[in-house]
Image (cartoon, rainbow, N blue to C red; front, side, top):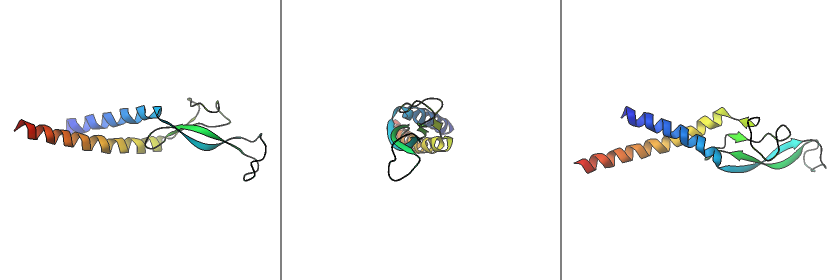
Length: 108
């Protein structure tokens, strides 16, 4: 059972890391040199990329990095990565238990 849980945890970290390939978008501040948007004087907003699924944990930092691209200088939120890993842990743990129950039933 311990081997199952360790394997499940490793799979969860791997799946959480691979979920960075799933991109989404959010409205973010990209600086302050633009026409006034009408609702927030002094800031410019654009649609920026974010990565991670089901919980996004990597966000483009507009105005600091290349706008529209995720890189090492962008925001990586470790708390949200842990939440994403927790979701994947729950999924892989349930799958591991169901598979082990199925294998036990089949060996009888």
